[in-house]
Image (tube, rainbow, N blue to C red; front, side):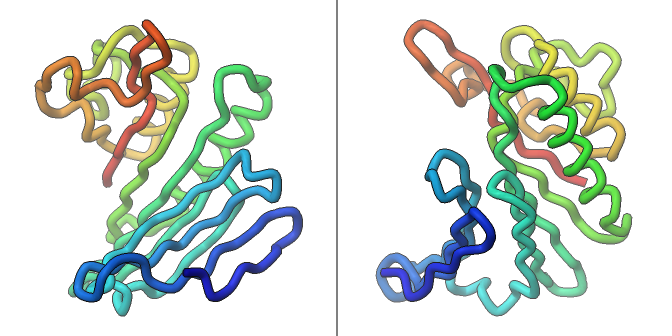
Length: 188
């Protein structure tokens, strides 16, 4: 299934062949840690592979895929933010890194920023009405505030919050009785 695995520092990078039946195949671009505890990836349908003009693997938590669609350059970020048990300084460093990466993208290019952001932005959009559509889930925590500040500072809109949905369709994480939304899609 895989043609090549490369080691890059302490990380493993996948350069894969296609998955699936002919006509419905996908290619996976990914990067993960050697310990297999962290990693990010993007599947691209076979019909779009020729549109991929670049893949930037910044870490096992950040990958950027660049595609040309017509006359538009699309920058697709996939991220895996640090979970709640990690020190605040490490979290700040992560969000500063991705803020810098997104802020370097010219305004005439499209940004899609998606992944497991490990924070609860909540249902209230007070103070963030340009970023948060008002249809979130639960209450905001400190990591959710970081997400909102990030999105607001870069003029990103959190798509998950734009439309009213059933509670079950808002939840992206379940652990026993705990239900929350920690996966988000943002666009500019």
